[in-house]
Length: 478
Ligand code: ADP
Ligand code: MG
Image (cartoon, rainbow, N blue to C red; front, side, top):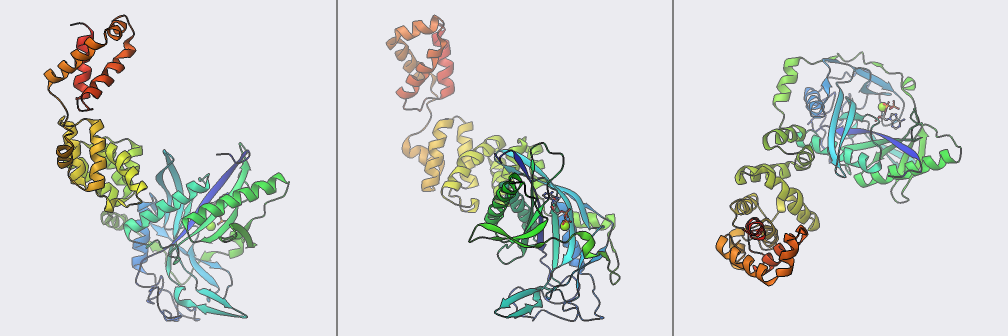
């Protein structure tokens, strides 16, 4: 990737709305389609004296998400007040976590452009959401339904280097959260929100450049577009000798550009301090173990198991476990066909290609696990060759028929009768004496020419293994 001699540095802050029934610090509902200000109470509109109570379910979901993101869970984490004024924040501060977040030091992996990427997760902390302002002419209306809704903020290390990588990272995080059923991952409805931090530096420079934060981007495509634009803008500025100012920008999808919103506050300006209304969150090892045992097998664990149990390369294992349904499909086929390597090869090549071309999800595949297993079995039993199997697969895909039926209809059965193949090869050798002489004189390349003729003479049905064996014997003059 060419960035005019610069290296982009990107880190993402993902705010995931936890799927609890009630808010982070009170019993108000979190229902999305409620009437304006229906989901409110003294706590969520910040009445003086109203006291917060921690939502246990939100803590449990956050721990599970943290574990799935490879994080260490702190035995003691602390809620802190992040002070700023905005009308949709009625208390004048947001309850968040600061220097003692619940989850830290994690990492996730995904595959992009044939490479395994490992991205660190600096921290994942709990906080409450703010309300929503609606500007109508000269009025601003505020809806506090979202005020106090539990969020998990997942902060990546500054490890991402391209816009595409950042979008794929965000997709992976979303997939993990959905897998655990702790967040519905809906970017449009705002249940997953992504802030992208972007800076650039000259390749080889020891320090990072000044970062700019792009807020509230509501689709993966826009994450990519916004970052691409921002990288170009920053390189242009640096090239012109201008300084990048630390600021928050917004992405305008219509104009496909980012625009300045405000200069960014730093941590001191927020005057973080431990919230005196809340006790620290104490989590014991037993509790972490209990929550861990309730987790479904995570994509990364499943990938590790596939590597061990089925001897898959890491790359294949990551691709096959990127989606639960695909992993299920592979595992079933591997077990049924008793040939995991073949199952993985067929899925990684033919099946994924057909799915992509026809824009189908694995759950809509016309070739079932049973069908693919049957096909693999037919190759393993030498009923058809690997080459024929590709045609059979493609017919299975088109017609939904079973491999046996297709093989029968097209008479694609492999010829494994040694005598019949010998006869064909003897004829070919007799008809091509000069090539035979060439071969015996050392031009071994003509071997392929004979194989071609033999396959042609048998309409591709001769077993390639047998053709090779018999040709070798006959050409050596035995
Ligand atoms: P802040 O205190 O400004 O929010 P953080 O240190 O919490 O900054 O980092 C916020 C996000 O920005 C993280 O995802 C981090 O990886 C990323 N980040 C930090 N420094 C840079 C940088 N120079 N360029 C790009 N991203 C950065
Ligand atoms: Mg931050």
